[in-house]
Image (cartoon, rainbow, N blue to C red; front, side, top):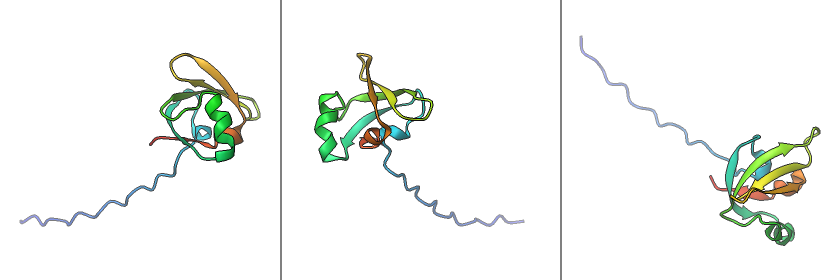
Length: 92
């Protein structure tokens, strides 16, 4: 009996949608990539949401909004609305 080689099928590339802070699960961390909304960017920058900063989802209110984040290593806690968190994009 001879073995025949089965041609390898190319695996489809997974299209990964850009993730935002609102997509994090409780306790999950990510690194801020950029801020999507230019009007909200200054407010978020002043609150410590600077690209390159590590962010961890700390808690969610019972109805989902607001959420609390821990920024960086200083254990700085920030509370945001979910629509504000959706403008903070994460690195992949």
